[in-house]
Amino acid sequence: MSNQAEVERRIANAHKGKLPELDLSGIGLTAIPDAVFHLSQLQWLSLANNQIAQIPDSLARLSQLQRLYLGDNQIAQIRDSLARLSQLQVLYLHNNQIARLPDSLARLLQLQGLYLHNNQIAQIPDSLARLSRLQWLSLDNNPLDPEARERYQSGGWEALRAYLLERARGTERSWRAKLLSWEKAPSERRIFSGASEERNSSRGSIPLTIWRSRTFRFRTRRSRTSR
Image 1: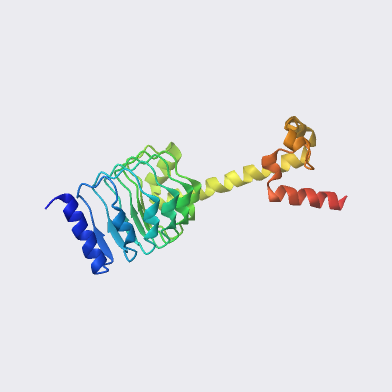
Image 2: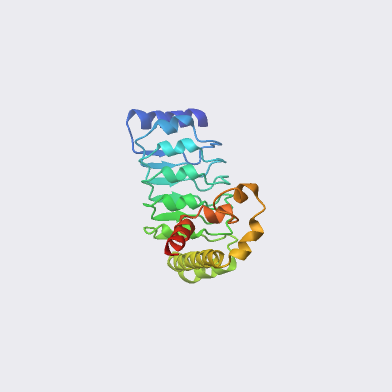
């Protein structure tokens, strides 16, 4: 029986029996068959050890999925649509070609295990620290930045998460300090008064990115009222 015939047989069985599991691992796939996306009852899906290069947005239709195996493929990008798998508890993406982790992964609030070893990941986004239920994170054999690597190697996910939270708080403090400096130094804001959009508006010479901050507008209104 050819690989294609075997793939069709397994998908047909899962559809007919409304099975919660489907194993298409090691069967020579270069893409995920469209028929898989109609198996809305699936809770467990293995596509490991194939030649799959992309995770299509259509995979998000499998809203009941709890365990997804995509290790040992040729995947280079994690799409934001993957975060719509709101019931996902375990995600295997090891032994691929992934270089970047999107912030959208932080929306997988049920995630307990995330396996990313043997990829090309250098930076871990601070947002990953929001995965409060995550218990297992595998990042071995990735070109992590030195600080993240040290934390991960010394204390695993728990130590790395503490570092990410600490870094996120530092970024927030830095942003707030810059915002306050803008409020206290109106003369410096005149540097940005060249843009016609900003020159003709009520916000004067305040840069658009700062003006769009609701915190800045609120503080500005409050200071005017107090005067």
